[in-house]
Image 1 (cartoon, chains in turn yellow, green):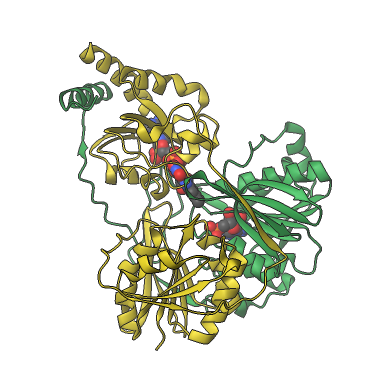
Image 2 (cartoon, chains in turn red, orange):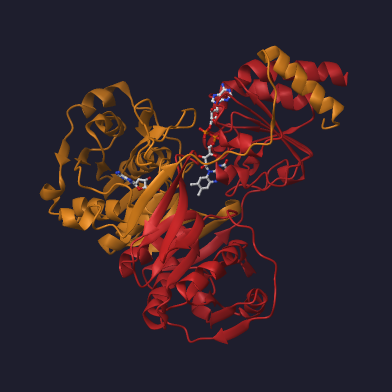
Length: 324
Length: 262
Ligand SMILES: Cc1cc2nc3c(=O)[nH]c(=O)nc-3n(C[C@H](O)[C@H](O)[C@H](O)COP(=O)(O)OP(=O)(O)OC[C@H]3O[C@@H](n4cnc5c(N)ncnc54)[C@H](O)[C@@H]3O)c2cc1C
Ligand SMILES: Nc1ncnc2c1ncn2[C@@H]1O[C@H](COP(=O)(O)O)[C@@H](O)[C@H]1O
C-alpha cells in the first residue's frame, strides 16, 4: 500500500497553515490505508521549512531546486504527476487554496484520479475512502465515497481542521527534482502586495461589517450612522467590496483581512466560510440577518433574526442615547 | 479574439430555506430562484470587454435546463454573440471533472483564443471545472484571475491569492482563465441589446451532437459516488434576542453598553 502525500504550501518563503492543518487527518487516513504520511515540499532554499514540518513527526520529501522558487501550477502538476508514477501514493492531499485550485483539478484529469474538492472531512470506512464537503454555501453537507483506485486526490478546505501540535522529530529526505526544465507556456512574473488604505481594520477595536443584505450603495448611511454611534470602523464581505460599496482594504475574510476586534457587528452577511475565517479573532460577534438559517449565526454570540433596516437605525439611536 | 465563456444557472440560496429529501438523495429546489452564477457574470463582462477592445466573437456555453435560456439571452444582450446550451439527462452533473469533459466536447475542434469560466459556482463550490477544462483541452490556464492583460500570443493574468496578494503570471494563448468576482463592473443589459439577443443564435445540443460518449460522462464514468446529502447540525451558542424589531434593537443596545463592548 502506498503512503499519503501531503503537499506543503508555502509562499514568499513562509509555510502556510493549511500544510499543518492537513496533518490533523492525514495520519489516521494513512494508517487505515496501510501507509505513512509523507509531506512533499517543492521549494528552493527550503531547508528551514522542511525541518519545521519534520517536527510534526512525519517524513518530509524535499525537492530543493531553483525551478520551484515560486509557485507555478504547471510545474507542480508535472512534478506530482511524476512522483505519483514513481512513489504510487494511495492519497494526495492538497490545500483548497489559490495554489491548490490552480493545480489539483488538472492533475486529477491528467492522471484520471478520483477527486473531491474542498473537503471538510475524510475517513476510511470498511476500506472505502469517504469525504465530506459542503454545497449551497454551507447549507447542505454531502458525503462522498471514492470508487476504488490506486491513488486518490483531495483538496482540503482551509481552517476546516485544527493543526496538531508539533511532536517528535521526523525525517527530511532530499529527492531529485522530477522536472528538469523551466516551462515556456506559464511563467511567474511577480507578486503585488494588497493596497493599504486609510484605516487598518486589523487594528480596529470595533467593526461594523456589511454584506450583500445592504442591497444598494445608497443605503450606506444606515450603517455609517450606526458605526459613528459606537466609533466603529466599517468593513464588509467580499460581496460588499465587489459591489463597490467599500474599498478592497476593508474586506474581511480569506482573500481580505483577518480582523480581531473586541466587537464585530455583522449586518446582512450570510457567513460564508471565507468570511468567517476572517473573524475568528473577534471576541464578540453580533449578527443581524433576516435568514434564521444563515451560517453566520453559528459563530455569533448575540443574534437578531430580522431586517437590518428595521434594526440598525433604532440600534444607533438607542446606543447614542445610552452612551450619552 | 475568439472567446468562449462558460456560465452556470445556479439557485440563490442565501435567503432560502434548504430542505433535503428523506432519502438524502436530493435537495428540494422547487422554490429557489435561479440566475447566473456570480463569478460567471463577471466572466461574461470580461469577455465582452476583451471583445470590444480586440474585436472578435464571444460564445456562451452552458450545461443546464431550458429555463436557463433567460440567463443565456441576458448574456447575449450584454454583447455575447451566440450560445450553445447543452442538455442531456445522462450527464453526471455532480462531478466537475465530467462537466469539464462535456464543456471540452463543445469547444474541441473549433479555434479559440480564450475560454473564461467563473472561479467558483455558488451552488457546488468546487472551484474545479475551469482548471479541469484547460487540461481536457490541452491548453494553459490561470485560476482566480482578477485582472487580464492581453499580450502578443500570451496573456498576463493577475491571480488573487489569500490576503489580497496578487500573483502575476504569463500564460500562452490559447488559455483558460477562471475569473474571480470583482474583476470589473458587470454592465446592465441595454434595452436594444435585449431586443437583439432574441435574434442571436442559441443552439441546444445533447451529448450525441457533441460526439461525447455518454459512457464517458455519466454516473458510471464518475470515480466518485454521492452517498448522502444532509443538513449540517448547526450548533449555535448565540443568544437570540427576541421581540418586535424596536425591542430587539433596544435589548441589544443595552447588552452592548452593559457588557462594556461599546
Ligand atoms: C476564492 C474565494 C475567496 C473569497 N474570499 C472572501 C472573503 O475574503 N471575504 C468574504 O466575505 N467572502 C469571500 N468570498 C465570497 C464568499 O464565498 C461569499 O460569496 C460572500 O462572503 C457572500 O457575501 P455576503 O454574505 O455579503 O452575501 P450573501 O451570501 O448573498 O448574503 C447576504 C445575506 O444578507 C441577508 N439579508 C438580505 N437582506 C437582508 C436584510 N434586509 N436584513 C438583514 N439581512 C438581510 C441574507 O439573508 C443573506 O444571509 C470568497 C469566495 C471565493 C471563491
Ligand atoms: N453546468 C455548467 N455549465 C457551464 N459552465 C459551468 C457549469 N458548471 C460549472 N461551470 C463553469 O465552471 C465554473 C466553476 O464551477 P465549479 O468548479 O463547479 O465551482 C463556473 O463558474 C462556470 O463558469
